[in-house]
Length: 154
Image (cartoon, rainbow, N blue to C red; front, side, top):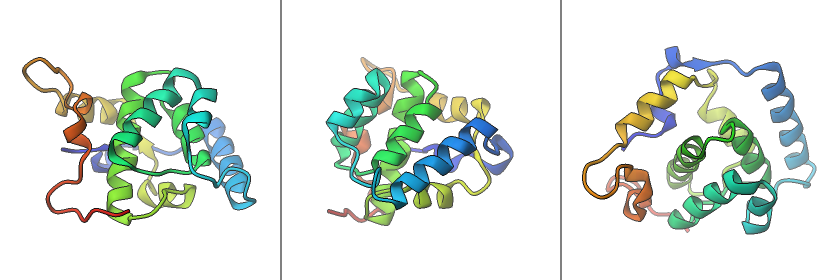
């Protein structure tokens, strides 16, 4: 299943001034050891429902991100639970690919041409719609497991 990593470049925008400032601050805090620790349930709770949604889904896959990444992605989610789930899934796929805790440097490397536009996010969201009792495949734990071609990392 596709993640936000699969959004084409023509459906990505450069960061707004506010996003750039938050990203730089998050990166600096991470580098100074203030936000480089793993994103956990306590941090998620401080971010409210969006943080808790991301934390729950990251736990399903045992994926790890830093506090700085968690804060930035919660901001990018714009209060939208679906966006939070898609960002958590995207970080899960990146974690499964890299095999290490995802940092702001990894996030920047994964999105060098900017972050997905609303149209790009909606295309990915619509692509994960399923049939049956669950309308969203991202609501199923098995969706979060490594794809057959991916190696599992501890």
